[in-house]
View 1: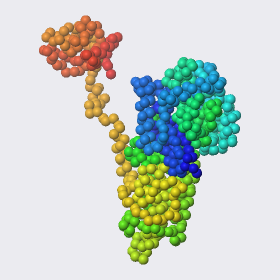
View 2: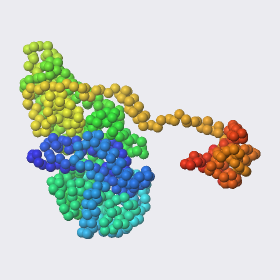
View 3: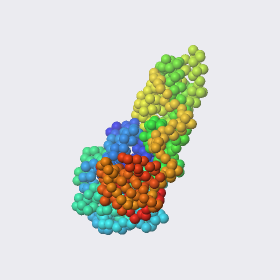
View 4: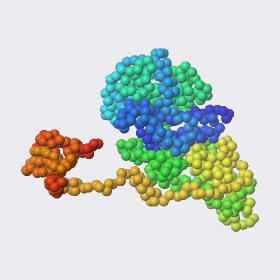
Length: 635
């Protein structure tokens, strides 16, 4: 393969409604592992990710948070980028749909589609789901709710522009039939064909007038361009595409080799997006991979369900590489995966500490102990030697095939197979026994050298999965980072190890769970020391009291003498409200009286109670209860 062969992959752009949880983060880790693997295969990789920042939902979130939509998306997009960087994403570009060049290109795309008759104006009446930003017919609803998220829908009627989906339906079906790997896995393809294409496509609403946070239709400013043309076009606008010009970057990288997306947005990427491209006269992406969900227990993660985990928290608790390893090893190719703290601890100990970490530390320690860290050239001689090399070669072959098919769990299993076989090889050859016999020094050197070449292969295969730890493994065994085609398991030249820190210290489950519990306590609101119980509050007796008369207290600018009818009689209360109220303003008003307060003397006048007022800038505001009878108890 030429080193110049390109590979363009994208993630779905993250919606800037809220901070992404670990289920959202799985996608960037998966795409990053694929990008790193393809670079190791010698491809010229271009890796795109970013944020989707327009729409009604964001407009509403911004309003409720007291921010402008731009301020709101700047904040959330920054958080998405921060988490992507924490997780080691090696993307080449991070696009935002509020980028000026993207907005300009999308407006031109909309105009082009309108001018050629693929977009027309009409009126929409239907059921709209705000969170999903999708319209549904009555028959598509499930128990009257959105079929995708289960939330209530709104009856909506408004003028809108529509895209002629049905015009391109047959062309899309033909393309899918001629390109069996266009949609993967196979189960996702069947779902799209049987549930959406075969029943027939309806024209798609592509503009809105009921909100303003979007890219304006430049020839009809009542309308903003709806999410699908806006967000989906990012895959080409990021390369500098406009309908009337194509950049060198676009010509080099388009069509995309793969769109990595969640199965919940498959319809938009496998039906809407290809049809938009057909209408523009552009090539379709080579492949769309709809990955499964990462579940918490048996549920998809949701803030409302209280089962959300965040990548930055998990990275702090377990390390970035441990989180990446878990995500990529736990998620099956075609079915949903699961995450829990207990499962993470078990997998960390079994795979990383006991299998890979143990192999590296044992081998490096024995090489240091028996040869001062350097072993000389050697070659496989025995049946055990040749078996280890065969297992390593098969592991490398299986790993390549699995990664090419985006089956990261299978690729990791190939790595573990080699690590387990290498550990077994140690037990079979017993280097500690060979070291006792001076005549077997050469055999001991060969055993350790074979182990080190196996570990070098393991380290290189782990580079896309857990980059930092893989680099350490390769360094410890005296190896080099290589393109996969350069890994030669028969080359056993001399090498010097660099033993260092323990790679994966085994976790004590009870201690780790206690640490996790303590970690999350820091985010819990601390209990206030001044809190009282309901019984303590009940001791305070509040009643409505009518102001019978009021006058300034002699010798004070702040105090008023109030005579209050509490329903049982009249009592005197002295209150510091003279700077905010005149006596005339208060007479006849009903106030809240603390009826069971001990009497006190203020400027020589007895005060039998206290009235309630709120502190405000520049003074106070008395709480009035007009229309309430004197003596009414307040609870």
